[in-house]
Length: 367
Length: 197
Image (tube, rainbow over all chains, first blue to last red; front, side, top):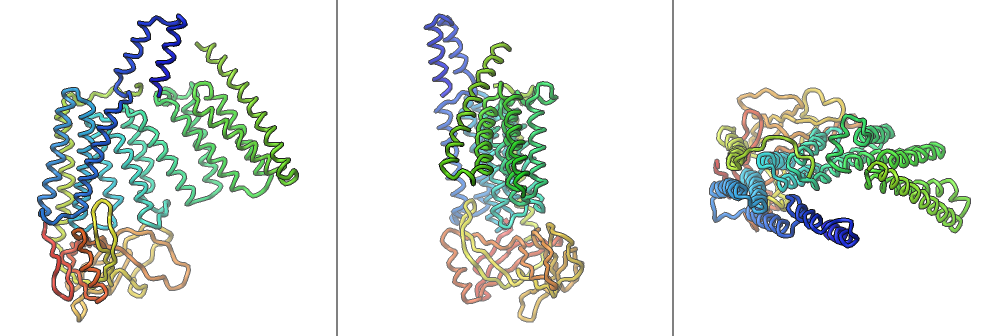
């Protein structure tokens, strides 16, 4: 974990006389005091909340006749009120972990209520609507309490919404109005992530967008769509990575994720284009384009963004090997190909070492 | 962490709790009332049905019901078919047959007028594709009444009725064409009756 590594480094710096012991202790104390710091207790509390929620949902699913259905509805509504007010009480006293766990229970109770009504009135064909309603309830709670935990639940429900769209069978994204709602949900989650400081949840939202684009492409494997992915990804990447861009400030507050995911979409677009084009020359041209994009990624964002840099290295190496296999593979035979592959990987390694060293100098100069 | 917006949060978490609890309760209340109103105000329709089984993770055991009106033959379609692939709804006019059950006499992709001796039921939106063949193929619309949730383990009764072709379902249909199951009968004897709430 980061804390362990940091503690080791701080001790080393203290031993080397670079840092007074008092500063090192103060730094660690500051880190431990942060809200977002990983704590086993907090995670276990959230897990306990999820287990209790699961039992509640299963209780609803059991359709237990001993209790009249109106009493069951009343029970669920009482739970919604109870959990939210208990959460308010504990949050007011500063018990944030307990508050978060209670908010999770509150949101899950709301979901149990929706499921219960669906069961009472034998609703069918409404799975996506139900999920959307649940998502809205979670967003409301996340916003009202500025709760990172409930934001994470909302992100999971956005995923569940995408899954229900496929579950209903015969999904055709282009004519399924709800399909176009998925990126809207992702934007809502990202807004909540910023508002509630649920930093790690951000990835769920970005991955949702990527999965959505993937589904769109599977449904329409067309050249224009691949080009659109590439263009949109590249534009988003430039907007997020160039210090001159108007969105740079906003994007860099979100860490390396915006640059990384937009770069990934651009790369996926080009890779799809490469698999789509017919002639060998077009394929090589696209391949050279991919290499150029990888180098541009390293040049533009590599110094500040490790995630983009490593993705770019991987793309560069894989594409070189792919091109070598496509162009020389048939002439050389298998053993010759491994020879070429070895040489290529050695060249890429040399390039990576050069780039890393150069970026190191850049970082030093900029400090 | 960075990235916090300078938005004024509700200082008092109790206000947040009140807002969230009231709105979530209102949503559940609205869902219940919107279904109950169909039961209260809708017109009665008796449908012949056959059940098939499985289980919903969130809502528990249910029986899948398929109806005579779940197959709409192209002969009864009136009006124009949609032009390209789209999300479509089918409006189906039901009339009572001599045996007491209601069956489809007309179906259209645009709303049908209500008459005194017929009831118009509306399908859930479904994906429509123009068929290439000259006569359009049979439609299989759903109406949102294809599931009946039963207490755990009770699905058997209905399943056994399936083999005997003895299952009938009373449905209430509101003026919008939305349907709600009111009663399930085997051999004409009611075995499940739905209360308003």
